[in-house]
Image (tube, rainbow, N blue to C red; front, side, top):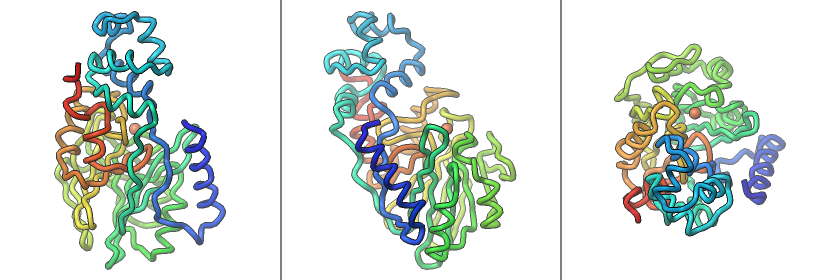
Length: 303
Ligand SMILES: [Fe+2]
């Protein structure tokens, strides 16, 4: 992680913890979750290709492939390897050079919380109808204190907790959030979390002006859900680890399904749709269609 970003995150976290009364909903400067080497690794594991196989297809030595994968960036090598891994070369290069970071996102009725879980940062979100003050929490992160502070500050009523998936960093504070809000929690029926009720794809929740639809975007996890919110000034997709700004959560269960679900159920939303990922900064459908190496242009067709 570049030092300037890690400093920005530390300062922001300290700011939140030291001065809760000044808690803000302004966007946070969170670094991209994955480096170009992380992206290559996810694609390589997903396609189950060895360094030697990639080298043969890209007509370069396996040593060069290994060096790239280990984080030594070389543009020509990256452009050779990208199409073999089904990645968009130019998007990968631009990300590796630090030329792209999604524009900061700010939307009335939406807040992002970033908390530290071990050596990583994890996001949770709150969305609310600014008029009725009815709110829904998405995941809990490592610690829901910041979320609860904002609930108090904005005088919100959290009526619902929706969980994107059951990986422990995303639901670590579920018991406390449930106790403090009294809200029911829901998760995909393909996964489970203590105290959460199962739901299927297509389940709709309506709350004030908000209309929330669940979409099954499995692949990273067995029952990963993306919740599409309509009723704020722009559509919002709470994506968990299905997709990240400039990357995706990785297809631990099925790489193919992860790619396909992201393409069909998230990137078909309007370009202005705000994507809220489980790690890294918020982004938009338009930005990801242009800059995410897994999806940019016609990924895999670049030569
Ligand atoms: Fe996850």
